[in-house]
Amino acid sequence: MDADGAGGLMHLFAEHEEAIARLYTVYAAKLPDHAGFWSALAVDERNHAALARELARRVAAEDASFERGRFRIEAAKASLSFVEEQIAQAETRGISMQAALGIALDLEHGLIDRRFFEAFDGDSQDVVHVLDALKRETAEHRGVLEEAREGLRTARQAP
Image 1 (cartoon, rainbow, N blue to C red):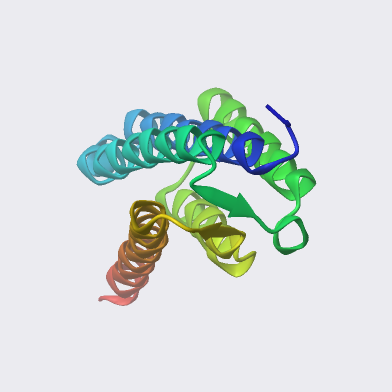
Image 2: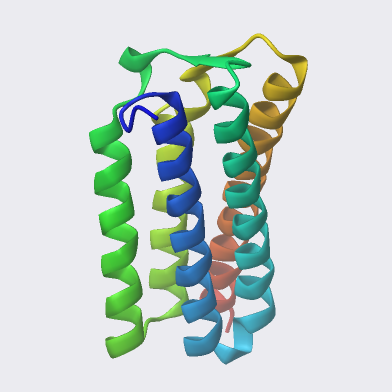
């Protein structure tokens, strides 16, 4: 498998989603009042990783192709390193809910803003369906995180 090709990118995406799941699990442990919130997001991220692994398998079977110019492997690797750093920091230093939401939003925005999901062309309807589901669920995560952040702001402003 070409590590810089579509299959390699999907495997890297799966690693990235698993790292985000680990990060959200750490947030659940460090923020017990919000453990259910972070744990639910972690489950979703693990599901995204499983979907990415399935896409990697389909790419290997040539059901999808990859447009190299639309998304850089280096950006994905840098984001994965960032997530790993955030895990280490949260484990050792702890984190506030506000900071955790900010980091999570940055991560979820990054995938959409970098047009990760547009980097693949699927000849197979199944591939297109999975990519669309990943994009939709990532956008939903962003919405949930934004709502939580707004709720936190509103609670802080309440008398």
